Length: 421
Length: 175
Image 1 (cartoon, each protein chain N blue to C red):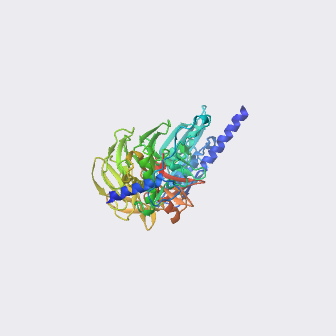
Image 2 (tube, helix red, strand yellow; image 1 turned 90 degrees about the vertical axis):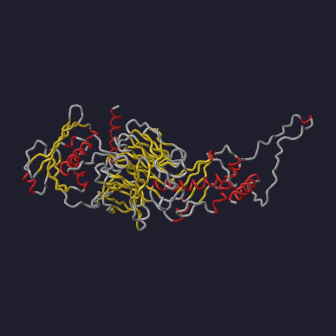
Image 3 (cartoon, each protein chain N blue to C red; image 1 turned 45 degrees about the vertical axis):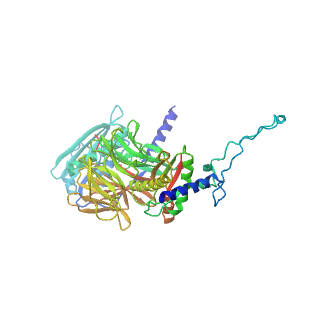
């Protein structure tokens, strides 16, 4: 019995290691005016299965916003720190903390963020977490550091979903992972393609398209219960689900009239109604932040361009004019920026447009299927390289790029989840 | 004019189908009567079993028949059934108008270039082009559904023009 226990334990340990090796982050550029932050090892952090300070350091480095300085010694949140010495070493802020094992097996993780310039405390957290959640606690602390030092909410504890295709096993998985690609969990698995996953605004559900009935059908899956409902299985194609900001409705692309048109349906599949009335392709609907406007792709002018119109119908207004292939509109959470994919000079590139001024910026080449981070500071997208597709992240100013690569298989169709509490 | 042409085509295609599918006939064949049952035989052979023909093999299952070809190809950025795809459409239309209990899924496909959802809509345009051609040849709407697999299920997995051409296709899938 004891032997079996040990065996199981080592098996799960091995699986854990394999899961962590799934995705790798590469930083291809850095931002200017980085904030110098020293991160100390937390006192007794080796008690926990994950090294909390290493997770915080990796998160802050990956953001491109910080220049992380190694504090070279473990510093507890209760220690008296010579902040002037850290200021002298170039750090504007210092992260310290401790880990303590509790009687019930959980871990008490304490952290403090100290300002070396003003010689004051900026923030602190103290949480009791299970062994499984020590990694998440590291992300939460990194979120707190990011928010206190930049004024913008951090996205390190958010999650992403994407589709993983294994050409050898010939299968498709809908995967949910941490925003850094760690901790992959399979939400749906099958032999037929899955495309266009989209997180519900409350983060409990994902809408996606599965080909398991030999045609595209839209499902909404509750990630916690695994319960799945068919939202649209009309004659023809059912695809491109996008949630309304309040999570009560989905905009869809259906071809039940013969051509692909945009429709809106209640999240439970009731109350289907048509929005666009063209004789061309209208697809890829996305709600604007106000919930009253829909951006979409249409080929009514010949090639695909991005348009917007009211959810109640009426005249559509063209949004993109440069290039003759503009697809996949995505609105930033504050509604001020449009990200999309444009084909220019043969290749597909990720662009962002300030909707007020119409100013365009090219953010990345070889990009498809963009998705904004919930704080609007990053865009994740699928990119081809080395014969397979992987995920990459670029900051909205285009200065910081990361690539998440896998050992095997193609990763596509990322959707960045909302803030969770 | 177009209607007359279509009707003529249905007649020709139907004629082709009712003939033995492995031979090509230039003229409309006579309808063959299968000897299912004959006159009552003499009484003294009552212990002999006379076999009954249960019918022809469904031409759909003939691997050498015209119905074995179920793919219609398209040019780059085109959603019009090419001349080489017309016989495919016509043969299956003839079969479906005769066998009204049969249903087909018409699955459109695209090459790998471009966005997932836009390609899905383009594949649907190809499936719809085939569906409309078949409807014009008399196949009822209830027998057909035009859908798209976009770029998600490529028949050819290469990344060159030959592979792309193979994947610009609509398949007629019997249900």
